[in-house]
Length: 334
Image 1 (cartoon, rainbow, N blue to C red):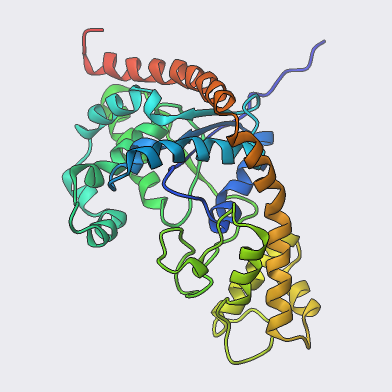
Image 2: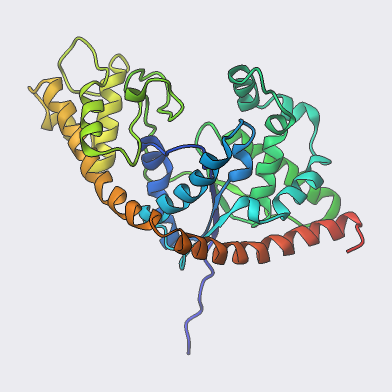
């Protein structure tokens, strides 16, 4: 008698191609993507439509889409086990977004924290896309009927509104959309700025010493950690009063697999100089193989296109089915 096969739960993750990804992106999310593809049926999107709420230089933007695909492959994303596609290649994302906009309240969108923050940051370009961004994100999610969506603290609100929109639509038209649950990874690190540990590490920071890019060279990585902000003390331990040191301990723990207590014992009686050098070297060792694989992959754009076009076809089949079901329920002639 053959054993029954349990269908894997579905997970969807999207990432914008808006510049080079950082150590924070890697430790906070991307490293978990590799583990998830062994356990779940994973769909990964390069969310290029979302990136244009901020003005993009066309040639650079185009290059970043390829670069993001190449980096995901270099990290170990397996296009056979998972689906990798480019968001703008699937027209149903924009089409479903319009449909869902008509089931989303103006007040809901006006309360979104990210809209308020980005409006202040880009006061000269407060566009409608920036306001309706969460509806497009809801469309991204709901098209693929995922069981789980990995979310960080800054994206939790977007998943909540996607769930609200889906439940509202389902109440009117029946069981159309799967209501996704947030996925909290078993491992993960919230990586803060190396120069201002009160802020999350960000590639958009004006100070290049505040973040480590995944593709930084070894010398740059070590130099940035040597310059990392700590405090006037010299004790390596986790403490609310020692935000800079605590951040470095978290990073070192994430790349070595050691607990915070083990890190504290390892550097007991040693100064910050030795500790920061060790963190820098550990991070450089972790990222070096990724950079090496990336350089090989990005050199063959035809192969990158082949991979994401295969993913596009897989994603399109799923998205079209969900979209037409929703349209038919509303009453459109198809």
